[in-house]
Image 1 (tube, rainbow, N blue to C red):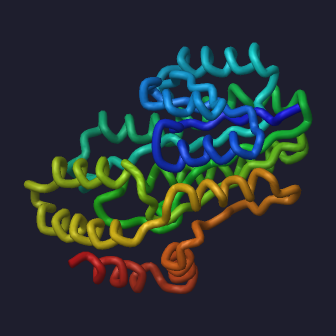
Image 2 (tube, rainbow, N blue to C red):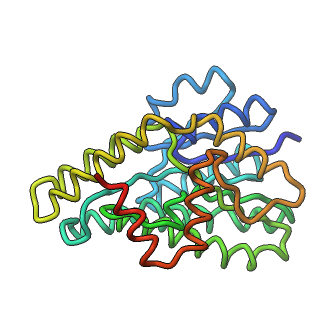
Amino acid sequence: MNKVALITGASAGIGKATAILLAEKGYNVYGVARRLDRMNDLKELGIKPLALDLTKNESMITAVDQIFNEAGRIDVLVNNAGFGSYGAIEDVSMDDARYQLEVNVMGAMRLTQLVLPKMREHGQGKIINISSVGGKVALPMGGWYHASKFALEALSDCMRMEVKPFGIDVIVVEPGATKSEWANIAFDSLMKVSGDTHYKDLAGKVYNTFEKVAKNVSAPENIAQLILKAIESTSPKARYVSGKWDAKFLLTLKRILSDNMMDKLIMGQAK
């Protein structure tokens, strides 16, 4: 029996690349996103697109119930959907902050709650939470985004120990900069929110840094390969980091440098 995979954010970027790769490897793939029309091309590959809104409980229940009714199980859940809301913490509205956490954290965890009972029933499963290097290293102007990814890391650590006795693995994947729509959304958000406030000078510097980084990013297909490696490992690591050397280098610096030294290093790059 082919394993059943549910992938959120399958309409673009890492989610779409992962859905395609798993389908090629013989998985029965359900790709979900808010907009069905952006997943029409996936049907040709045997991927089943479903509409799902991570901010609406009813939408998640409906999608998961449909998969259970059709496939009987979900063996792999890839919590990939998410976005970056950028701007100085003082400038970001509480409504926008809540929405950031609702999508990146609460939605992912609610979907996980819905999937776990069947995984326990079958005595196995893989939950892949797509975090970021930004789940370990915080940069200015990304406070609420980093808060969401730091939270996802902590929740993954707790859940990994909770569900291991049931044969379920919880795995964090930490990509560095990756080619996707994420960057454009984050860039636009940054300048819209803080481009004309007391933080406009720093916002401009961070924007310039983003533009430089965007010229040397990983392809989403590379991250998909890393996700596949984690899924198919019989003894997976707790975390997998993007193959880009700069992502691993940044995490290494975070471990060895003091907070003050790390602050100076990061702010020195914002020019």
